[in-house]
Image (cartoon, rainbow, N blue to C red):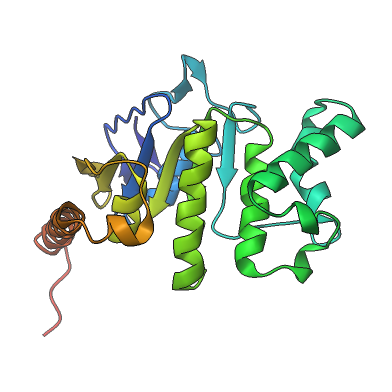
Length: 259
């Protein structure tokens, strides 16, 4: 796959990425390496200039029911109740009757432990609770592929850790394939089966690391394992290599270093 916002300025060149059914893949890299752009290509929000993105052989489109997307911010409709936000996608897709939509929305709210606030407006909820609503909204469509763009980055460390464990619990229950963007090395190791490290444009994928930690994973126990620290160190070294390779690139013609 190749993609550029304008001619001659490739963001990705000859990128190839596969995820197995039910696999949890983390995308890790420094700011500016194109992680969110890659996720938008995978979702169909952006179209590649060359190549194709498919789910089981079908070209990806944003409206494809097999695809769910959780953004960095919850992006909830403030005038709709929690339950109405969760069933919004079902309404737009014309799937099920009103009563069945409500039943299904409440089921997924129960999975994220928010059934008791189904009738509240989003502004009555904490940031972590709002992001759980956003997660339920994505899951209610029962997508085969879930794309997550740093969904917990704005949360405090304690809430973020709890959300990581919540996500693993849901993933082990529902079995979606997940592609998860993060800047956090420890988060990537804790969550993923495999971590893909992105280089700066137009390099695309720099390398990947298989996370061979046992499952199920629990935050405090998993992070005390020697292998956890080893994997974090490997990823930090890979990221350092990406940063170093960028600093070695030649300057553009006609430019000079600042004295």
